[in-house]
Amino acid sequence: MTWRPVSRLGLSVGVMGALLIAAVWVVVTALISQHHEQAVVQTRRDATNLALAFEQHVIVSLTAVEQAMKLMELALREETETRDLSRWAERFNFLGNVHLRISVIGPDGHLKGSSLPHEGGRVDLTDRQHFRIHVEQPGFGTFISRPLLGRVSGEWSIQVTRRLERADGAFAGVLVFSIDPNYFARFYKTVDLGRQGVVTLIGRDGVIRARSSGEDPAGLQGLGKLINLGALFHRLAEQPSGSFITNATVDGVERIVGYRAVTGYPLFVMVGYGLDEVLADPGQDADRVIAIAIGVTLVLAVVLLLLVSEIERRGQRERELAAERAKLRSANAELDLRHSRLEQTNADLLISKERAEAATRSRAAFLAMVSHELRTPLNAVIGFSDLMRQEATAGHLAPWADYAASINESGQHLLEVINNILDLSKLEAGQTELLREPADLVPLTRTVVRMLAHKAQDSGLSLTVETPDEAVLCDADPRAMKQVLLNLLSNAIKFTVRGGAIRVTVRFQGLGAAVTIADTGIGIAPEAMEHIFEPFTQADSRASRRFGGTGLGLTIAKRLVDLHGGRLTVESEQGVGTVARVWLPTGSGALPQRPEARRPESQQSAAVTA
Image (tube, rainbow, N blue to C red; front, side, top):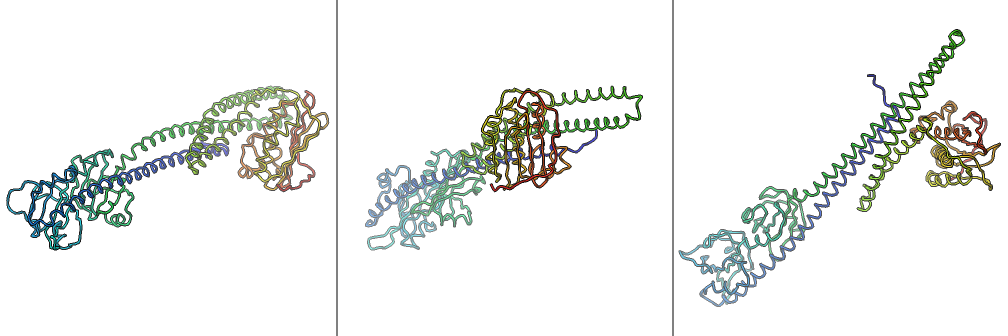
């Protein structure tokens, strides 16, 4: 199988299709990333708000304990012997299960009394930080210790202590309220944070006071553990509220953490959500979006493959026809030398011609059918891209709305190419039927000018129209003639540079009427004039690359005018401008064919500022 290079048109369609697919995936990736980012931002906000609620719970609890301690401190100040502390514990039953026990440490550092029954020898507590800090710093106030294993109770507790003084100011010992860490943990469990969610009460010294997580219902994991947050603690000290993402020291789970500094106490409340759980729902949505994008990509790929294949097949047929025409020219050159075989040769040539025309009609009919089938999925692509643009605009995602608009514009361009191919195929297959009626060229021409006036204005061109006052009637199909004028005026706008002028005139001419479109554009080279009505041909390949197009506009216009029995002529001078003229008979008879395109002997053009 011989490899043939892809034609310029096939390559252009393939590149545009690839860019369209790439744009779809850029938009999909951006939407997924945006969805994930929104989930993280919302979780940060939720974690910070929960941390505020838990902070208030800690403040209320510790304030109640402090008030109770101050009341008891005043009562004990004048006493030399400690009364039954269980009575005080019953008196403070309004605290519920906040405290585990009440105890008093004497000035010598030994346990002086406790609300819990205690048997045995003296308990030495001189090494405890909550005793030594009141000895070394008399004005310290309320001290909150790290979780300790009690020497009397044998249970974990947080010691809240205050210094006791006699009436004369002498050191009388330390009052201790022991709080069960599970008191905070039980409250934290009332909020469902997920299996990886966690609430932690941590001191400024980095030691965990209380902790509750979905994976640790007992609240013992990490209790009393010193965690090293490094520079993060400096941030916590500077910003009393905020959020961050980190890998937990206790269990290694990556979490989104919101924190609050507890007002009036050296503590922080941290609320964490497992990052994997937070992104689980957006991940499922992303899978659905990716599945849809894959489906759209497959549809686009199939459409592009079919379209490029048909374009290449048509090109191959055109090359075969060109080769056949070359054979015909060669046969004609040998006619003078082969008089004896003239009759047989003419018969062979007639058969070959009929076969070629039949092949052309069959190919045109097949291409028309395929182009029609291609328009259906392409319309779906255009519709969905427009829907994506509207959704992105409604969500204030301006860059992604531009991407969706680019997809829509590329789809519209592909649809225009397919429509042109379909129109040409119908003409070649003889399937175009004209609905003739008395048509006035004046309003029809003005309608076409109005349709393209905005495009001319955007291109910086001056567009004028001159028509007579009376009606200019011709026996024509209005829809077909509108398409002819749209193609000619679109070419004039496309190939006229900014600052140029276009003039459209309608007048009677001979036994018919003419519509003339004159521009001051780039013009056509003399050697290209004879090819301007051939399909998929532009006068200059450099102009094709600069201005775009498929080269079918003049071909379709020429064949529609021929069906009306009229003439389409083009006069052009390179660098000066082009004049396209459509002549139609005023009656129903067709005129003999005249030369369609000629170079003017002289042409006057004037630039009009837009």
